[in-house]
Length: 472
Image 1: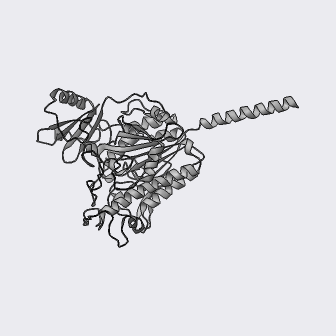
Image 2: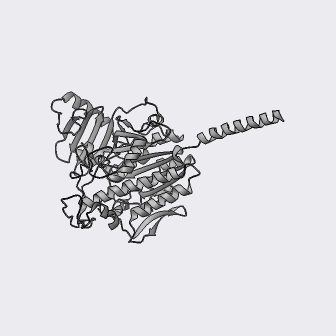
Image 3: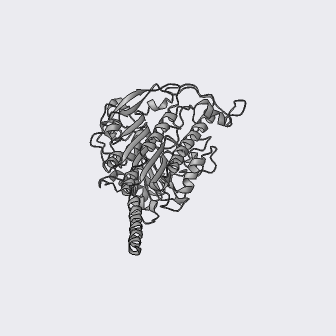
């Protein structure tokens, strides 16, 4: 009897050990939250002088690691998201600028394999809720063809300007289809509710949740109840002086753009808190990586006032600029149990590094021909990691703009058809605000970076983004 009990105890011990081992081998869940046009300086933990409270984001940073030199894929929506999904920078990406979904060239092609497709192929349930921007419902870039099991939201960035639309899109029966929406419903709420449903439905298996939220992108609009938090009892704004915005283009009039923008950022912060609280409630803390960032720098559309809110922090420029304010964005990664809390990492990384990073974290194969490098060791408590030699961007609205950083040096090139090119050089270590162009004083550095800039790109395969005519 004594031997029997001994063997039973040993079996229980071994069984327990094997159970722990099996549990530890569970593939981690990935939640990637992407804000729309949120500036680096709009998150209080990145800019203590921010006028808008972001307690949930600040708590997330306090529990994880804050990257202070993280770059978006580009300075506007679609190409930035292309870099995120495919791992290519703007020297090699298919989508290198914004375009109308209906023209067919804004969509990813059949051969453009996304992060979601790779994770789905590795056994992940994949869901996206929010703004896609890389393919209409009848294109090769439709969400159901790009690796998503579930989707609800906007396909086109122009449509996403409307927070009280009469329709959105959803994957139903394996296809992306248009679905009606009650125009009294704030779409941000509908989108977050779908994300919550997805987490609950997939809590017992590895999942990838991509949450590209639409706030605080223009137009500036929130439900009255949210706006009241940023108004005095008499209805006046807590962020004076207010200059009413008059309807223009896609954007409706807004009497209190400052208060409304603050409410939108607060809404974003609240929604992040909802997702984090759910993960904790479900006991998924130790199985889930949570990423938070923004698709590009702050906008100045629909009455938005990035100067008033110091939305770019110490950086020069906004959305559509290749100065730091247009492309440097906050990145927070929470990996409980993996790294010490409240870390700050100053090394440079970019959107095209997300695909290989998640590949290593999940054991998913990563193609060798992409531009991205993995920084996953940093998320597992290690310090040594291979870093980039340089970073490259290009963008074309009102002429071609290119930027390249190498270490602390940054070269920006401006060129339009029939005009001479202009080169600006900055040292980001001594001049983080890019106030002093020192190109004339450093001709050898300009020459070296200019040569590297030429090597960093290939001609665009997509005719919509063939800007060779500008070079003439």
